[in-house]
Image (cartoon, rainbow, N blue to C red):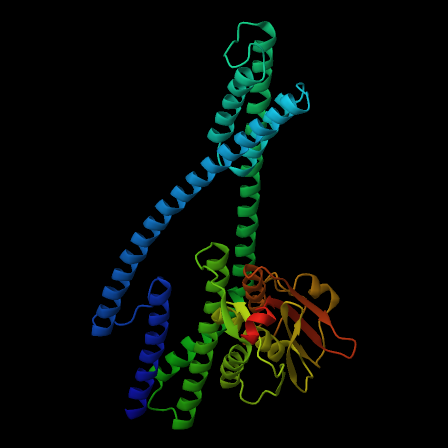
Length: 417
C-alpha cells in the first residue's frame, strides 16, 4: 500500500496549498477529514482570519465614512465660498447684479454633483438663499424677506436649487445602479463561461480517485501513476482558474488595492516567464527586452499574472504556432508590453468580445477539453484597467495574434540617479 500512501500525501499537499491560499485571501477552506489535526488547525486559523478581516472591514468602513464626510464638507464650503467670491466680483467690480443668483445655483449644482445624498445639496441651496438675501439684495447686510421681490427671488432660488440637487442625486443613484447591473451581468457571464470548464476537471478528478479506491488492487502501477498525474494536472489547472476568478471579482468589488511600486522590468519578466516555463517547459518563448534598465510603476504580482495569462492564452488558442514572442520596449513615459504568436490568429467577431470573459459556443470543444473560456484575458483587462491603462488585441498582417498594453515607467532622470 506504499503507492496508496503516496496518493494520500499528494491529496493532503494539494489541500494544504489550497487551504493556505484561501486563508491568505480570507475565504472558506476546503474541508478535509473533520477529525484530522490539520483540519482543526485550519478551522482555528480560518476563524481567527475571519475575525481579523471582519474587524479590519469595520475599521475601514468607519474610516471610509469619515473621509467621505470630510470630503463632502470641504466641497460644499469650497463651492459656496467660490460662488460668494465670484458674486462679489460681479457686483462690486463689474457692476453686474442680475447673474448673482445664477452663480449660486451653479454652486449648488457643483455640490450636488460631487457629494453623495440629498443633504449637502439642499443645505447648500438654503445657505445660498440666505447669502444672496444678506449680501447681494437690498437692504444690504440684513435679512429681509418681507419685500415681495426678495421673497419671490428666494422662493424661486430654493425651488431651482432643490430640484437641481434632487435631479443630480437621482442621476448618480441611477448611474450606480447601472454600474452594479453591469457588474452583475459580468459575473453571470463569467459563471456561465466557466461552468463547463470547472465541471470537466472535477469529473476527471472524481472519476480517477473513485477508480483507484474501487479497483486499487487490480490496477497496475503504470495505470495508478497515470491517474495520479491526471489528478495533479487537473488540480493545478483548477487552482489557476480559481486564482483568475478571484482576481476578477475582488478587483471589481474593490477588495484588492492596486499598489504601484517601482519594479525593475528584467525582474518582472524573468519571474513571470520562469513560472510559465515550469508549467509549459516545452514551449518556445522568444523574449526581446531593452538592454538598459527600465523601471515600471505597477503591482508586480498582478502584472505577472497578466503576462502568464497572455502566454497561456497563446498556448491554448494559437494553433499552428512555432513560437510565442514576448517583447517590451520604451515609448515616451510608457513601457509597452507585447505578446504575440505566429499561429492561426483570432476571428474578427471574437476580437470584439475577447476581453469580456464570454465564450462563443459556435465550435465547442470535445468532451474533456478545457476551453479556458477567455477568463484569463478577462483577468488581464481587469488588472490592466485597474492600473489606469488599456489592453488591446489585434491580428498581425504576417499571421497570428498580438496583445498589447502599456504601463507608466519612472522618468529617465530618476533612472539615471
